[in-house]
Length: 65
Image (cartoon, rainbow, N blue to C red; front, top):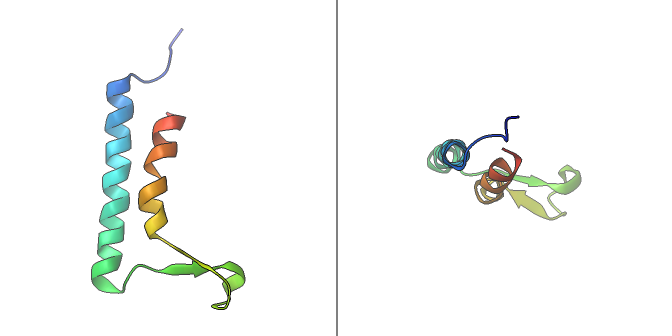
């Protein structure tokens, strides 16, 4: 029975996802600025920046593979 992906492939896929996310964030930063999404679409509410995606997406990618 297959035990899933090897550690080398998991790290490769995680690295690819990390590079793609950071490339997208860099593109946003250099063109319009990195967007912030506000709760209930109201600027009075707290905002969540897309920078959090660059920090959080690599971890679930590695864990879910």
